[in-house]
Image 1 (cartoon, rainbow, N blue to C red):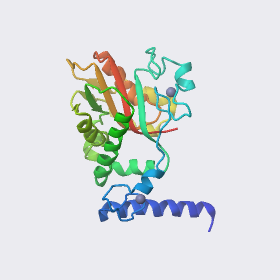
Image 2: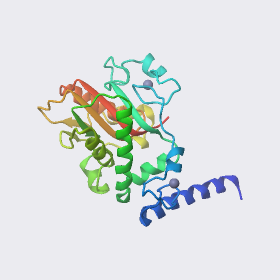
Image 3: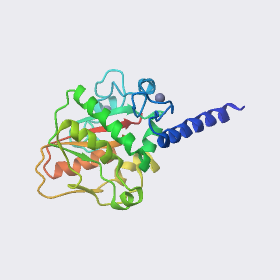
Length: 251
Ligand SMILES: [Zn+2]
Ligand SMILES: [Zn+2]
C-alpha cells in the first residue's frame, strides 16, 4: 500500500472511531475503548494529548521557556498597537497545541454531538486556570458568533467550553454584552496578513458594562486577531484588563 494512502486510511479509521464513540456511549472519544470510569477521553488517550505546557504568556504560542516570544518582544504593540505585548490582551493561555488529535476534537465540538466533549474540555480548561494561579476575572465572555452562523450551527462551541469554567470559577458567564455584528469570512480561510483586517470592527459591546477584568474564551487561537479585536473593543468600553483562555493554539 502506498505510504500516503496508508496515512489517509489511518486518519479515516481514527475519525470513524470518534464517530462510533460519539453514538455508543461510555466510550473514549479517541480510541473508542470502553471507558470504565465513564470519562469522555480515557486516561491513556488524555496522557497522549499535546498539552501546551510552556508557552509565551502574551500570545500562548508554544515555546521552551514560557517567556515572551520573539514576536511579542520585538513588536510590543502589535497587532493592536496598545503598548502591551500581544496587543490588547494581558495574558493568553491555551490548553493544547493544535496538533492531531486535538484538531479533530475541535471539529467534533462544532457538531451537536460534540456538546459533551465541549463540556469535558471546558472542565479541564478550568483546572488549568486554577493551577496557573491566574487572577479570577469579573466575568467570562465567550467569543461570540454572528447570529447567522449561530443559527446554522445551533450553538456556539465557545459558550459550551465556557459554561463548566464559569461554574468552577464561580463567576458570571456573560453571553449578552458582546455581539458579533459583522458576519466575517472564517479566519481559517484567509492568509495570516488578511486576518486582522477581516475582523476589524466585527464586535460591539453593550453600553454601560462595568467590568474591569474580563476572561475571553475561544476554541482555537490562530494569529490572535479575533480575540485581540474583541479585547480592543472591550478596552474602548472601559475594561482595564482582558485575558484569554482557549482550548488550543496553532503553532
Ligand atoms: Zn482512549
Ligand atoms: Zn508571544
